[in-house]
Image 1 (cartoon, each protein chain N blue to C red):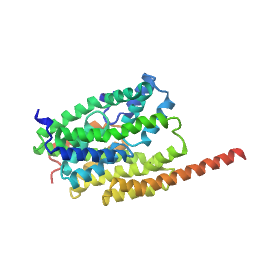
Image 2: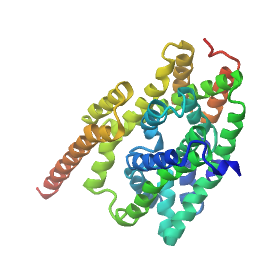
Image 3: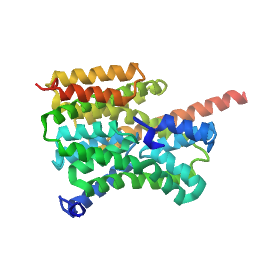
Image 4: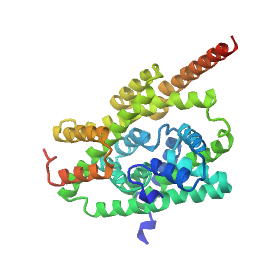
Length: 184
Length: 174
């Protein structure tokens, strides 16, 4: 049962849990809008993950079925093993779960009030901005690798103009990478 | 349900909840969706929590969220562990980078598609572009981003909506 003892120490697990608890309250447009903040914490500040592992986590989560929020689980596994995955996933889900049930009971009566619409529509531009910021933050380490850029731009156009399921695109990306076409 | 849903659960959720099981009417679904988007957290999990809560209270909410997450969590964990055992291999590294580049492309395309929803709220573009630059280029933290761009945008939007509302009220009375 060696996996029950965290590889990185309980202090860090608790710290990660609290950090993700707080971040989750600020997730304005789905879990992916947290990616820049998580990248800053896990890669830049703590050094628990490399840029390549971070980008790989998002890719792995998108290639498995289920809600996008599960990229947090993959990040947790890679950063700090089993307990990292538990801390990050649970930390990310609890605050919004409590809010969702509470909001479901109180606000459902009038979701189109000026206040609720203002909140939703006011945060929307920030949420969309965070999506583009995620792309910039994650691609920055590969700024000199034109092949990676080319692949990203190609997949933006295919994903935008076709209704192809993401899994096929990701499979093509995996094949291109595996044959070494992205190596400098 | 979640197991069938590659690349986002929402369209599938709508079909099953509204059309097949008839748990909610189309209107109720859209309203619940609106609330689940307004509160923080993953939309689909929020939605399933609210749906479960409506029928069975806390226990229903818990069961519903577990139903949405348990199998995918196990699947994604197995996938991660499999990849970790071969992660030092050059082929795996290349494949992951390729998958990552494509994933970022897919996410960006989603962002571009969402831009259409911003046609009406012109001032929102300031917050949008500001967020991209501040977070993407200068690494601004999330609390700061909400404070600097989110709150003003909410304030402006509420004012705009109130003005529109009172204007339309005046039209109907005159």
